[in-house]
Length: 70
Image (cartoon, rainbow, N blue to C red):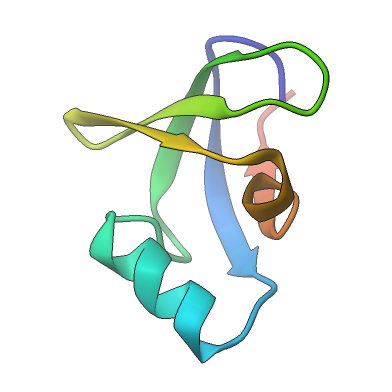
């Protein structure tokens, strides 16, 4: 995703623990998110979920499959 691009989460590829953590932050399949920014070289990603902003690491972000409307 590019900065300020919206998309809908289609899947979270991870175990039960990761899915529980993401659900606690409001990140779950079917939810719309907006990528705000990312930090240099495999750093964290800032995403907007609902009315809040969340930072997630590069490894976790790679496990979230998002469908975008290019």
